Image (cartoon, rainbow, N blue to C red; front, side, top):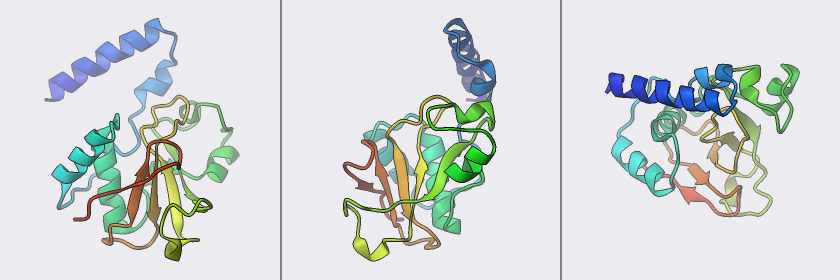
Length: 168
Protein backbone atom coordinates (compact mmCIF):
# COMPACT_ATOMS: atom_id res chain seq x y z
CA UNK A 1 0.00 0.00 0.00
CA UNK A 2 2.81 2.42 0.89
CA UNK A 3 4.67 1.63 -2.34
CA UNK A 4 1.50 2.17 -4.36
CA UNK A 5 0.95 5.55 -2.67
CA UNK A 6 4.56 6.58 -3.35
CA UNK A 7 4.27 5.53 -7.00
CA UNK A 8 1.08 7.54 -7.44
CA UNK A 9 2.70 10.53 -5.71
CA UNK A 10 5.75 10.41 -8.00
CA UNK A 11 3.53 10.01 -11.07
CA UNK A 12 1.31 12.94 -10.11
CA UNK A 13 4.33 15.05 -9.23
CA UNK A 14 5.75 14.47 -12.71
CA UNK A 15 2.45 15.30 -14.40
CA UNK A 16 2.08 18.47 -12.35
CA UNK A 17 5.61 19.59 -13.20
CA UNK A 18 4.88 19.07 -16.88
CA UNK A 19 1.82 21.28 -16.48
CA UNK A 20 3.71 24.05 -14.67
CA UNK A 21 2.30 23.52 -11.18
CA UNK A 22 4.48 24.73 -8.31
CA UNK A 23 6.26 21.69 -6.88
CA UNK A 24 6.36 23.23 -3.38
CA UNK A 25 2.57 23.28 -3.33
CA UNK A 26 2.35 19.66 -4.42
CA UNK A 27 4.93 18.49 -1.92
CA UNK A 28 2.61 19.38 0.96
CA UNK A 29 0.16 16.85 2.33
CA UNK A 30 -3.57 17.41 2.10
CA UNK A 31 -4.87 18.92 5.34
CA UNK A 32 -6.18 16.07 7.46
CA UNK A 33 -4.36 13.26 5.66
CA UNK A 34 -2.13 12.51 8.62
CA UNK A 35 -4.32 13.54 11.55
CA UNK A 36 -3.90 10.54 13.89
CA UNK A 37 -7.51 9.84 14.85
CA UNK A 38 -9.87 6.95 14.33
CA UNK A 39 -13.52 6.61 15.03
CA UNK A 40 -16.26 4.05 15.47
CA UNK A 41 -17.79 4.56 12.03
CA UNK A 42 -14.94 5.00 9.56
CA UNK A 43 -16.57 2.65 7.04
CA UNK A 44 -19.77 4.70 7.04
CA UNK A 45 -17.81 7.95 6.70
CA UNK A 46 -15.85 6.56 3.76
CA UNK A 47 -19.05 5.46 2.04
CA UNK A 48 -20.58 8.90 2.72
CA UNK A 49 -17.50 10.69 1.30
CA UNK A 50 -17.42 8.46 -1.77
CA UNK A 51 -21.13 9.09 -2.42
CA UNK A 52 -20.42 12.84 -2.34
CA UNK A 53 -17.44 12.27 -4.66
CA UNK A 54 -14.94 13.86 -2.28
CA UNK A 55 -11.38 13.62 -3.60
CA UNK A 56 -9.54 13.02 -0.33
CA UNK A 57 -11.65 10.49 1.55
CA UNK A 58 -9.06 9.55 4.18
CA UNK A 59 -8.43 13.21 5.03
CA UNK A 60 -12.19 13.76 5.36
CA UNK A 61 -12.58 10.76 7.68
CA UNK A 62 -9.67 11.93 9.84
CA UNK A 63 -11.00 15.49 10.07
CA UNK A 64 -14.49 14.32 11.05
CA UNK A 65 -13.05 11.96 13.68
CA UNK A 66 -10.93 14.82 15.07
CA UNK A 67 -13.95 17.14 15.29
CA UNK A 68 -16.08 14.45 16.89
CA UNK A 69 -13.39 13.71 19.46
CA UNK A 70 -12.12 17.23 20.27
CA UNK A 71 -14.91 19.59 19.12
CA UNK A 72 -12.61 21.66 16.88
CA UNK A 73 -10.57 21.47 13.67
CA UNK A 74 -7.09 19.93 13.48
CA UNK A 75 -4.14 22.32 13.48
CA UNK A 76 -3.67 22.11 9.69
CA UNK A 77 -6.49 24.66 9.36
CA UNK A 78 -5.96 28.43 9.45
CA UNK A 79 -8.69 31.01 9.82
CA UNK A 80 -8.95 33.56 7.02
CA UNK A 81 -7.62 36.23 9.39
CA UNK A 82 -4.52 34.20 10.34
CA UNK A 83 -3.87 33.31 6.72
CA UNK A 84 -4.15 36.97 5.67
CA UNK A 85 -1.68 37.99 8.38
CA UNK A 86 0.78 35.51 6.86
CA UNK A 87 0.37 36.92 3.35
CA UNK A 88 -2.53 34.95 1.84
CA UNK A 89 -5.36 36.63 -0.06
CA UNK A 90 -8.50 35.12 -1.62
CA UNK A 91 -7.83 33.62 -5.02
CA UNK A 92 -4.19 32.90 -4.15
CA UNK A 93 -2.69 29.56 -3.15
CA UNK A 94 -2.47 29.19 0.61
CA UNK A 95 0.22 26.55 0.07
CA UNK A 96 2.69 29.14 -1.21
CA UNK A 97 2.90 30.44 2.37
CA UNK A 98 1.63 27.45 4.42
CA UNK A 99 2.04 24.15 2.56
CA UNK A 100 -0.41 21.46 3.62
CA UNK A 101 -2.80 23.87 5.32
CA UNK A 102 -6.37 24.81 4.43
CA UNK A 103 -8.76 27.62 5.30
CA UNK A 104 -11.06 26.78 8.20
CA UNK A 105 -12.21 27.94 11.59
CA UNK A 106 -14.32 30.93 10.60
CA UNK A 107 -17.89 31.36 11.77
CA UNK A 108 -20.57 30.18 9.34
CA UNK A 109 -23.60 32.48 9.48
CA UNK A 110 -26.35 30.11 8.23
CA UNK A 111 -28.01 33.15 6.59
CA UNK A 112 -30.04 30.94 4.24
CA UNK A 113 -31.24 28.95 7.28
CA UNK A 114 -30.56 25.59 5.65
CA UNK A 115 -29.13 24.21 8.90
CA UNK A 116 -30.90 24.00 12.29
CA UNK A 117 -31.29 27.56 13.61
CA UNK A 118 -30.82 26.58 17.24
CA UNK A 119 -27.06 26.36 16.63
CA UNK A 120 -26.74 29.70 14.83
CA UNK A 121 -23.70 31.66 16.03
CA UNK A 122 -21.99 28.34 16.83
CA UNK A 123 -21.34 27.02 13.30
CA UNK A 124 -17.77 26.82 12.00
CA UNK A 125 -16.78 26.23 8.38
CA UNK A 126 -13.73 24.58 6.83
CA UNK A 127 -12.53 23.81 3.31
CA UNK A 128 -12.63 20.23 2.10
CA UNK A 129 -10.53 18.75 -0.71
CA UNK A 130 -8.16 21.73 -0.76
CA UNK A 131 -5.02 20.79 -2.69
CA UNK A 132 -3.15 24.08 -2.96
CA UNK A 133 -5.09 25.59 -5.84
CA UNK A 134 -8.44 27.39 -5.78
CA UNK A 135 -10.53 26.73 -2.71
CA UNK A 136 -13.51 25.22 -4.49
CA UNK A 137 -17.09 24.77 -3.29
CA UNK A 138 -16.68 21.91 -0.83
CA UNK A 139 -16.98 22.81 2.84
CA UNK A 140 -17.46 21.12 6.17
CA UNK A 141 -19.75 22.93 8.61
CA UNK A 142 -20.00 21.88 12.23
CA UNK A 143 -21.13 23.07 15.64
CA UNK A 144 -17.95 23.88 17.54
CA UNK A 145 -17.23 22.60 21.03
CA UNK A 146 -19.90 19.88 20.77
CA UNK A 147 -17.90 16.66 20.42
CA UNK A 148 -19.61 13.31 19.88
CA UNK A 149 -22.95 14.83 18.88
CA UNK A 150 -22.76 14.33 15.10
CA UNK A 151 -23.47 17.98 14.37
CA UNK A 152 -21.42 18.00 11.17
CA UNK A 153 -22.55 18.70 7.61
CA UNK A 154 -20.91 18.76 4.18
CA UNK A 155 -21.77 21.01 1.27
CA UNK A 156 -20.37 20.26 -2.16
CA UNK A 157 -22.12 23.16 -3.90
CA UNK A 158 -21.01 26.13 -1.76
CA UNK A 159 -23.87 26.16 0.75
CA UNK A 160 -26.80 25.49 -1.63
CA UNK A 161 -27.43 22.12 -0.01
CA UNK A 162 -26.10 20.22 3.00
CA UNK A 163 -25.58 16.57 3.83
CA UNK A 164 -25.39 15.57 7.48
CA UNK A 165 -22.65 13.09 8.22
CA UNK A 166 -23.72 9.71 9.58
CA UNK A 167 -23.78 9.57 13.35
CA UNK A 168 -21.47 7.12 15.14
